Length: 143
Image 1: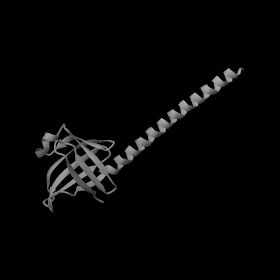
Image 2: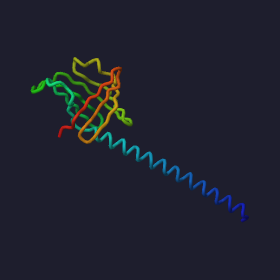
Image 3: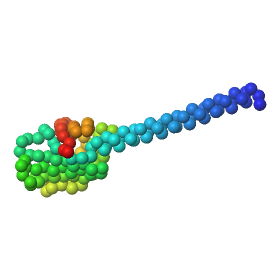
Image 4: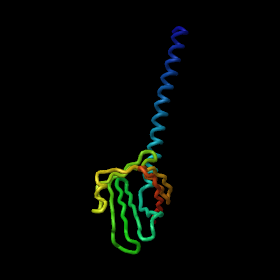
């Protein structure tokens, strides 16, 4: 083998090694991002009570891995005044509700979706609705 052949072989090996390392790093970063997204989604799961609501009503939201339902009750009563729910999705910090069912007073929601920014902590959820009028909802986790 000539020196040129040895150098070209070493260069090709280095390039191949760098390419393989780059692919490995991209794969590892993608898996880490996926794990982080899953962790955030898992934090959303549970039963939440809206904190910034008037004193006459109680609003609960139940979130499972795939679905959500929001229920409005009269405070101190065991009667549901309004409800809606369906599937949900999360991408980065954008929470999207895909409405599939609702009580008669909310039936105009069915087939629509609402998009919100979400900040989730273990026991606190802040939802900033992204509509023409931006507003925040603060929720606490029920235990």
